[in-house]
Amino acid sequence: KNINKIKKEDSINWKALKKKHKLDERENKLRKNELINLELKLKNEVLNQEMIIRWTYIISMCIGLFILVLLIYSIIKLNKVKYEANRLLENKTNFIEKQKSELMSNISYAKKIQELYIPGNDNAYNEDECFILDKPKDIVSGDFYWFFTLDDGNRAFIVADCTGHGVPGGFLSV
Image 1 (cartoon, rainbow, N blue to C red):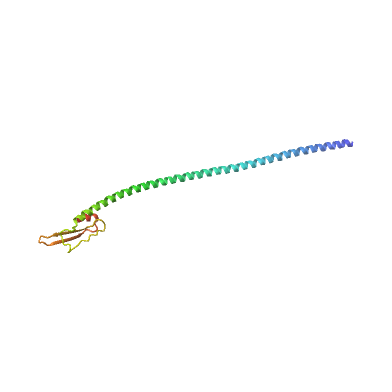
Image 2: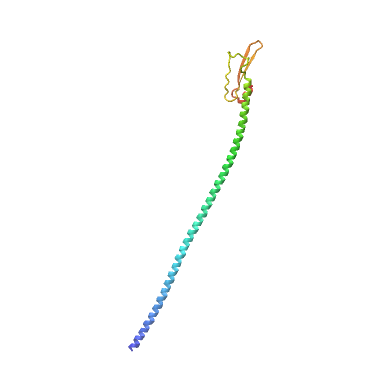
């Protein structure tokens, strides 16, 4: 009887051990699956973080490239505007220089004409009695001198001034 009883108890213990072992195996599988799922979640999160970092880098590079292109375009546009302004200024400067050259040429010619009409060493007057000091402010003066002999034999000397009238005053003196 004892042997049967021991066999029966062993059989019950064996069944209980077997059941416990199956439960432990199931628990281990569940834990293993949970660990695998947790591992996959961590890997996915790491991949997502890497993806975010890559996209942030790509977007930053695109924005930087856009700003660089915009800056280069602005510099080129400003240089073009500056070039056009310099060209316009050079044209105006050339025009003014040409006008100045023509005006100076005309004024110099007017001075020569004026000097021809201002008496120099001629017999209209006696050098011991008078002199002329002609120092125009610019190239041509508005002063003029007239020496002549009156009908009664007396000599007349007229000095007139058109100061402040510039070149027209100088021509008036002629």
